Image 1 (tube, helix red, strand yellow):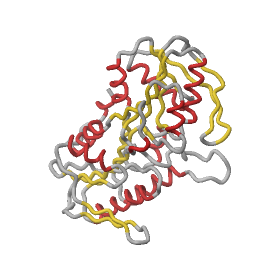
Image 2: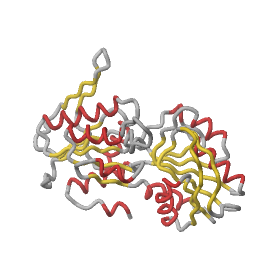
Image 3: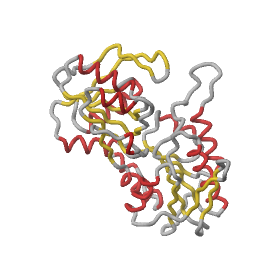
Image 4: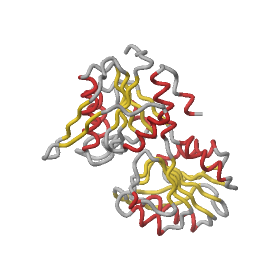
Length: 316
């Protein structure tokens, strides 16, 4: 695929899934969000229209894709709209990649939802994809277009470095989070531990053992998302039972589904630190929750992509 060099012709669009983040990104880039209509017919069918010229422009569509599936449809329709308006290049900016956990056929007769979503996005006209902390790194291979996979670690670790915590151990809540947690520990010069757990059913987990020394230490549990917080609260309890002094949680995507808020409020966690890849409504916020912004990270990635610069410097 030939590279596109159309400096000065960038266009930012936003769906409705996380408009505040899109506005922050636009502000960081010192440019407005382009005028687009996203509305619904009486039966709920989604309608999209660009209200300004997109011909020959470098279009970035900012839209996380959590449930409901309307968020994915908005992304697909906006991409199709941009393509049919003769955009030179369309980049899907997905702060959160919905259906990412359905990345393999781990039981009989199930869909691989992550691959299906990737296929839909490419079919709708995505020329590039820009995301943060996919559930598994191999999801990049599901796309037949270039993917820039960013990490929220610089944002999260910067926050914890400013806190000046002493004698810290970074804890991976399961094997899948080990690589993320190990990199997190390296960035803040901390030691590393991992939880050995089993998952008897979806959204249910049981801690079997803790591999690493946590007694008398400050623990930071690191993961890519918090869904129902069942895993997090069981890990928090296990660390407290083993003598941890303070327990913090750091996660990129705050799904905070179902009983998550009540579970976290009722746990012994010192602070829950997440990012704004997904909006956290006022009724889901609580005293111990801290939301950090990834707008500047995404804005820099968009700027580098637009000018055909490497985004690898954002990993430092």
